[in-house]
Image (cartoon, one colour):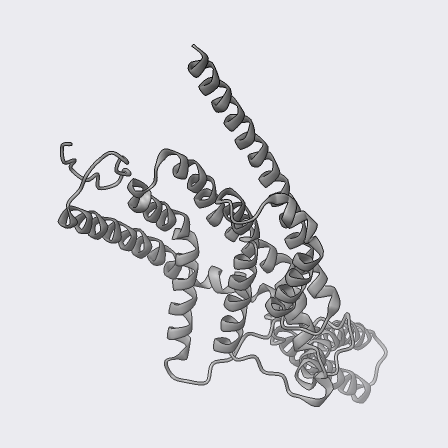
Length: 349
């Protein structure tokens, strides 16, 4: 059979034969392409690092009670609320003093006043006007940023933390392309039947991972951060270090994204014939118990509600994957029956 020239981007056919050097050359090319795409996406993420960090910080913002809607016992949050209320009081006082100043100026302009009374009114108006200006300046100096940001302790920590978060975001965005390149490289080793098994699984991996990350970001992470940051807050001055917060967020989102690969594992073991869909359904209780343990590990809070929220989509995904496995098994059985019928017809003829 003739030797095929390896495709740089497109998958090589199953019938093609490549030398070791050609395989290594193809692998090198795909790695270079993956690195180039990653660098391009990383450049965009680093360029937009302020927006990126603001997105990651949103669960932290929602856990804070600086606005005064809830009576937090955290001393730093109480100080922040006091500053905001002091600013509002200064603005109200400035308005009231300005009104008093106008009244004093009108009283001074009246006729029939003695020079001494007019001098007293003029001095009072000037004092009230100065006080109104000072109060107005104090109100304008009230902090406008009502969010407590993560703190950094080292000289290089702001740069390293920003660089790290941009790198993880770029890896997440380029994951589908990297997985496609990995699939295209190993595709020649698969037969047509194995390819029909592997292709849906390879497509599901990045999609489910991204769905898991989105679920973790919008549902699980805010509840976990809110519980942990407000736990026993009356006994601590709670400062959030940027490195620790971003590491916690990334690990939690990655774990939830990995947990969302349950359908991939179920379909893989059923389509490879390791276990059947009926056996999985029969042992559903043990599987749900295992998913509960995994959800408890992925959500490091003793809050049972958070664990149930993280566990619910896993159970739904498991049930859907068992349903898909049954459909695939029935289709495989029907194809096998048709093949046997065709063989019988050929043998009779």
